[in-house]
Amino acid sequence: MVVQVICGLLVPFAGTSLGAAFVFFMKRQLNGCVRSVLNGFAAGVMTAASIWSLIIPAIELSEGMGVFAFVPAVAGFWIGTVILLLIDKAIPLLKRFLQDGDDDSDRLTRTAIMILAVTLHNIPEGMAVGVMYAGLLSGTASITSGGAMALAVGIAIQNLPEGAIISMPLRAQGSSKPWAFFGGMLSGVVEPVGGLIALAAAGFFVPAMPYLLSFAAGAMLYVVVADLIPEMCEESHGDLGVIMFALGFSVMMLLDVALG
Image (cartoon, rainbow, N blue to C red; front, side, top):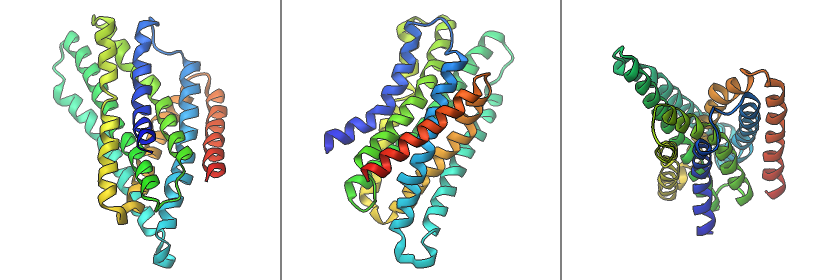
């Protein structure tokens, strides 16, 4: 089980690293069709996981509260949503603070802000995986090993373009391919760290598990609505993205229900 948990925590980081490795093989960003496919499938997986693997178990764990069993799930969900919203609001403020008007440094600033944005988004995503495995290990949540791994894989797929959008601009600004890859990979290091923190905290605060599970759901659904779906639809391949969303949702639902 320990090996399984470690592998699960490393899967999202592997997705970021694989995306960053595109710098060795591609001269440009991922094309619109590939981005729509990846974003749509990842959005579907993460949406289904938020419902069946996080929100429903959070409500089931609070059944002792009777008609108020929904309260921990709602509270945790809002906390996760608001924290991600505040992170997104802080990034433009930081950009304006660092802006100095010089063209070269402006490009560097935009790249630095992009790295920071991806890194900040990766923290709650890593924590979401950690919370899933904490629930699996504690035995207090109706979470399956297949569902936990499917969530990790879904986040890893979503991380593929994120790794690429960091390594490729770094390469375009003159960094060597190995250094550009390292920069993209580095943004994903926080995911297993965040997962370990969530895993450790959940182990000490098992009674807070409904809040932790729904917190992860709120954070993930914010990423889906604010990032993945708009990026999925902005290209001319939006219809393909919608189909992949439905496919990702169906795959995750099948894994969670069938293996549950």
